[in-house]
Length: 239
Ligand SMILES: Nc1ncnc2c1ncn2[C@@H]1O[C@H](COP(=O)(O)OP(=O)(O)O)[C@@H](O)[C@H]1O
Ligand SMILES: [Mg+2]
Image (cartoon, rainbow, N blue to C red; front, side, top):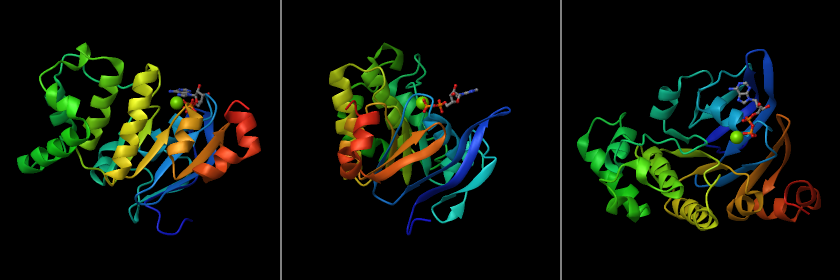
């Protein structure tokens, strides 16, 4: 157990059908932290996030969030408790405008004043979305769509946001911009856990990191200590 953790996944096992993918994975995030999760393709990073947010049911282990057990809760229940999730692949509805998408992101919020406050906060972080409110998401570039997907998740003003591969498939310019936005989000007080294939970059902006491999924890530590670890360097950072 980590003292004062906002999220704590403890020895979680989960998978698809008969196939077990996670074999006792543990992850934790403290309030205000930015935590990176790295590891090779197929390590179970996305599966871990899906299990934490309730899309998959753990077969063993438990998940605690903000002082209560959330193991087995539905995704909408987890979201209402303040845990937002941006899935891999920047899924936006192409025919919806930016504003419609953001308003949809706030669907659990009934008070229009809260929605306006959330929009103000999101536009402060992503000024380009303010300018593009009426643009259809499908006509935006990949990097812009990823910002829409992140902004939509922020509309619930979550206590923790999980981002799965936010920079995947983006041009170098947008990869840099997404990392800049993650850093800005942390500075603005958000707590983040991010899965990234861009391992060196992800560890360099993280307070702490985890390395998963074959559905198990392999390494963990502060961002700088993982970056300096010869084994981590050799195995995951390309020498
Ligand atoms: N919906 C699914 N059904 C069956 N197997 C899946 C499904 N999604 C992922 N897997 C398998 O689970 C393993 C871990 O996948 P994933 O969690 O996506 O890894 P990562 O995100 O680390 O690349 C892989 O072997 C993958 O093929
Ligand atoms: Mg993945």
